[in-house]
Image 1 (spheres, rainbow, N blue to C red):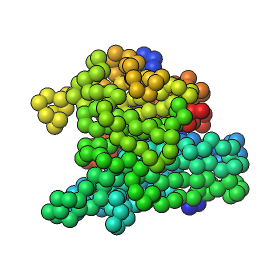
Image 2: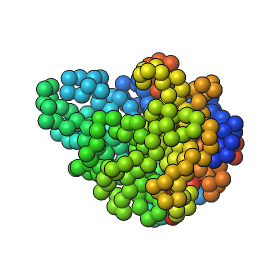
Image 3: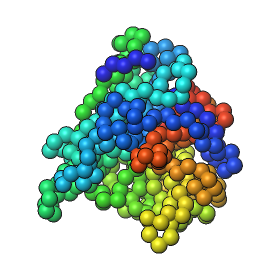
Image 4: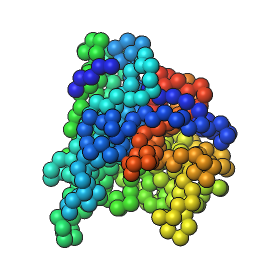
Length: 356
């Protein structure tokens, strides 16, 4: 896959909630996609790549979109994972769509859905040696009507993106097909929103299993097990996330430190009567005990903020500045991708999600 040639602006994780600012610009809207139904785009996850020279930074974003309507065998429709990008020197923060990188394959564990992608570095090699990224995604298979033995919710899949270091002054990437079997299985219907980082010598994937947050860890890239207990539970935050926590955006800050920024939901009586959708923060140095960073959330619809969904958190300048990428309702029944960040966040200096 060859394409030629990204984010920025004021969200202060770990500091005061009053320092968070959501930017007005849309990074990627459904009508900008070159594939799919053009009705929604979401679940952003990003890395920044220094390609063929030190002035050739490229922001790579994986995302989800729907490309076939609901059917009897795929009640949620068919969803795939796409790739978008922004090159250094662009005079706009909007992204360009490069098209799909994972689409459901007939007979596979992701024959209906490949969605909720998250991207993390496999290697931190210099640009001259090429770099490789792992993309994990939520998978669902199609089930015939009445087939009670069919396990629709198959778990997490994995695919690989690799930069071609021999491509000279171009952006050339190899896209591999997903693994033949899930890398994490035995999940329930209400599992999703995975986010990945490499820290403490292991790959860590945080995900939600209604209504709590779980963290799976593995020395290998393809051998995860659903933990027996959550690491953060709904109701644990002091002033938000009373009824559900989801979309736990994690990032590493050194070899033994992790931060997590989940969405919290509160409602009256049922989930269809939301009273607040918020974003708060936790931190951990042992990957099992998470403590709240601030008593108040960083974002809250009760405070007039837009509704944030499907979060991804990034830091820059050696963990001094922060950014958040997220899906948000666009008023037409779907989602678009937006962002927020601290005033000093520089997307070209985005820190690696691989620590060390």
